[in-house]
Length: 429
View 1 (cartoon, one colour):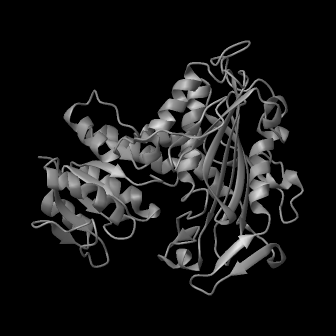
View 2 (cartoon, one colour; view 1 turned 120 degrees about the vertical axis):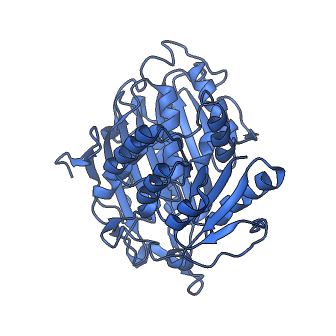
View 3 (spheres, one colour; view 1 turned 90 degrees about the vertical axis):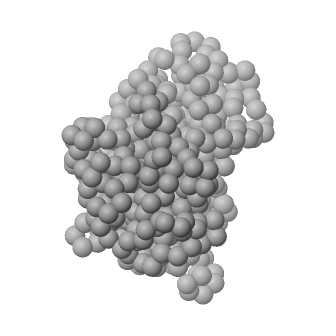
């Protein structure tokens, strides 16, 4: 039986413990070790099984129980060192997102995978969504015609306590190491990764080439709680992302795909889905190719946290239930290497390249108090950016940055080339 250990058993690690528990009970795996720097206790749905050993040092865990699989759910800036040690100890790994925070780290981890022959699954669980698979199939079948733009909208709420949950919360760096606990890099990382996966299905030239990004904050933190970015892919296809953790109304997380197909029936009136992505324009044009979303022939929308999908011509959401368990997929891959991983490290390199470019951007601009609405008392205090939901919707609809929408608190974007993942400045402001 495959033995599994979890490194980072508290906090978000409880989610993994709840996923592991039924697999342990059914005999699919055996949980042999839990590790955390804080005391580990049983929790609802996350018991500590009899015989499972507890550790406060992951190195001791690796040496003592020698698990077949290590699930790594620790702060992002610790991922690389722990992953390398686990691989060299003979483990296959399930590594939480973001896997690493630099392309150098990505390449180092990839080299260790080659050296050891082990497997690394990255914790982008939304990539296992049946709703995403259905959308990708529709794109590849040409139902949307040529994809001309991808947009992401998200509006969540986080209170003061969220930024007090750990020493690295709300930080750009800790102890001289990058952390990047911002809206784009952490809570909305799934949205960014999903949009890149959709782009990959939309065009052969899907690698990000350039980025324009605006980062904002409403609190005395080091990272963004409100942000927008526009990526230009090698094909010219733009991806616009507009998100906030200071929203007025809840937008779960919607990925809009615009295409040239017929809005009523889908399909391609001329050309085809494989014609290479965006037909004109690009991320620097201030709007979606061909005049933006308002003039697009057809549209599909994926609400990725809820696995709901609306295809061209459909007025209502459809539920597309089902997600592949990343851990079970890794177990299947261990048993038969012909079974592909849902989220191998190699597919996340473009995401990490974008993350590196965001890291190179200046610190977020502070949104002045006159544009904020505050409610509650710390640590349950909430801050809302007045009018931000409308701004987010407009940004996605028009393929525009906040600063291009005459938003009064918006500042000029940071622009960079990311062809080599370095986040090199273009010299434009």
